[in-house]
Image (cartoon, rainbow, N blue to C red; front, side):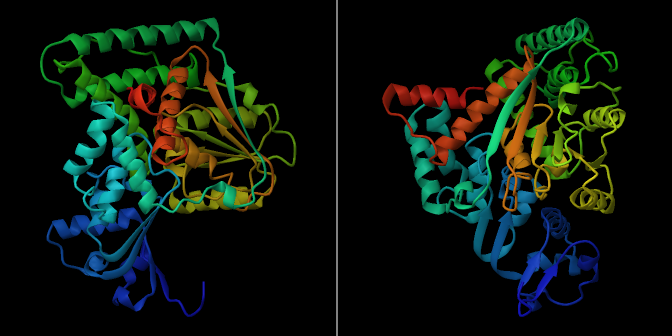
Length: 440
């Protein structure tokens, strides 16, 4: 950066020690959490130097990883909308992650009239797409995105080859029996919730998700886990309208990853070790470096035990580690070639990192949100990568993980339609295309 440009990292110690006006700087760099913190203080009537961001008038506010505000009701989204700016930019490689309404929050921040109004957006885009199953809503959103978006894909930079593989692994007979027991218990619970009278409460959906997630746990952890409680009576709160229940459950499944990303925490579990030896087969080559992503830190624990047993040096990067410890771990992986593997919680390190020293990316289990995986892969396959990159996605065949992949495909098709990467079909073919994309 030119010495004539005055910049400030407004975060942590520097944030607390700033006693001058921010307008003395040309560029101020901060985080979503810092902006949200000042926004909360302002809502409580606070008056202090910590309100510098909200009280300043900005020439331009740029949101990096702008998909972080895709839920308009979150504090991060409300906080950045409160910034006083003449110009507003959103930078993201994945503007649409789960549904068309992800775009709405970006339009709100950008103040794109009239579609920064939820009624206008739902009337012209959401309702025609999802309720009427008509392509005109999708065409409207696609045209809008073309008008306000500058698209720069990977083709504009010179990158080595990328090879992506899905590796199916099986279960032992005992593991399959445990999985099927969990699956049957989940079906019983969902059937009860769908057909019970009364209004839904949040505990119904959280418990439904917990049971669905138990099936995912077993895919990673095998039988070496705590006993699964399947026969507990369902809590009250099933809903009268089954379609509403499915929509709400779908919302929980979509947004668990987002909640973890926004709060910077990890999903943890205290299961015992379970090895996937297939992953370890090609790690002996001195020229190869690996990044392994998982949603659960307990899975990272198991993989680290397997790596240690095989004499393969590794390090960790996860939200439960202090910032300084994470930074040191990242530095060691980038500079010490004897460390072959970095184990990363996808909710903490799936975005924002540069891991181009590695050339293999391993996703230990599929995520509900495919764009979380896209962001994770982009830690390795990005500008600065000099080697051919391989991406391996592990899936336990015959389990819910295959269903997760199917949902990923539908979400990717929807994103491609909105962003102009796939042609919108006409007539009945177009309606079928929409029906598949918006199917729960």
